[in-house]
Image (cartoon, rainbow, N blue to C red):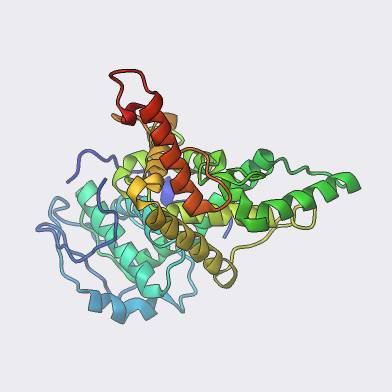
Length: 358
């Protein structure tokens, strides 16, 4: 049992969301000595009491999950957390919170139902350890968690919609002047994916724009009890997939102003999974091209450090290294600019000051 992570209230599992350092990959093959999972063919929870909740019973393989995936579909009953006994609700609430973290950090757009099911299994595995409770993992419980896949994306979009409008200066008005200004702004932000830059007009400061920080703060680090703090191991180091998800949602919110008047655009796997993958690919290429300078690593560290401070968490032990503004030819110019800065620091630093301190 992990005493360091508190049990989350069942309200987190039952409420409806808006809208549709360590390795944080979801490896479910490491069976712990006191933790195994059941996956029952029965799609309901009985009334009998769970005995010996301090001991974890186990026994189900990934093949059992595959055989029961079909049980997740074709059910007419719409279950909710209140339909389960209080012990199941405690585990489900914690598992749902963990599942939401796994979705945004590991699989914002799961390729298959099996991927979602494996995330649910991992979340239940972890929640069982945290709560010290033993409850069978049934198809109904898996389905309850899987509902959160689209919900968490929708919740991020709801938060980002207002942030995006105010940050870039979109104007909610029916005047022709406002409509034209909004349309022109949306076009300029989308041209060359300018919105990923701190200065989107000059295209400098790639991935340093404050809106990424605001999204991370508001979604996962609002206070010291938020998921980014409670389940820190999934966010440290800050995953590229989470950054790609935030950029994708940002682009969707900009697209809503394309006509000059904001129109709701719903997420769909067909429309926005490619957008997410494009942002992820750009982040990965930027990381590779600037690897000797660890530019993206510094950006990610800074985002996480500021998020911790925003949440009121423990002050980071290290000072984030800021990245200089980058020019139009993103990757090559980023490297050249960094080299120029370091050379200037070496030539002009006071005696006794190292270049790394400049």
